[in-house]
Amino acid sequence: MRTPVTAYLGLGANLGDAQATLRTAIQALSHCPGVTVTAQSALYRTAPIDSSGPDYVNAVLEISTTHTAPALLQCLQGIEAAAGRERPYRNAPRTLDLDILLYGDGIVHSASLTVPHPRMWQRAFVLAPLAEIAPQRVPTEILRAALDQAIERIGW
Image (cartoon, rainbow, N blue to C red; front, side, top):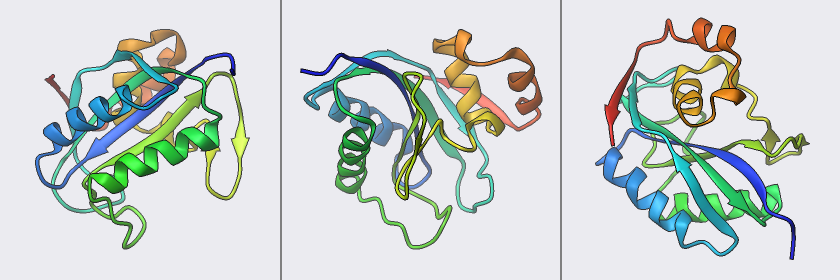
């Protein structure tokens, strides 16, 4: 049995009932062996960045997991597939997007996974909900710089 690692996951959707999709994804994660959801942010609405389509609904989860980062990614991709996720092109609108933002203090660089997430420090839709549940993980100056992006806390 592996020692549990604290990881942070970004959730986003902008097709269909995005709020319901995020809630369903959190339920699916909570039923995934080796994963325990330990904290969740509120939901946030943001305009697409480098993309098109309707506004996104985003959130961040803190989890405890005994999975390796690649195994956790496989679990997340299975949940995305069950939600109808398609990848027709980069930054396409999506039914569900699940990203590993941080995996303990680990650094991963592979063809399929980069941790910490390479663009998380530039995105208010990641930083605001992450700061809500783990303020120690978000440097104040980085959060301030990203908050010029339109973001609205919409509750849960």
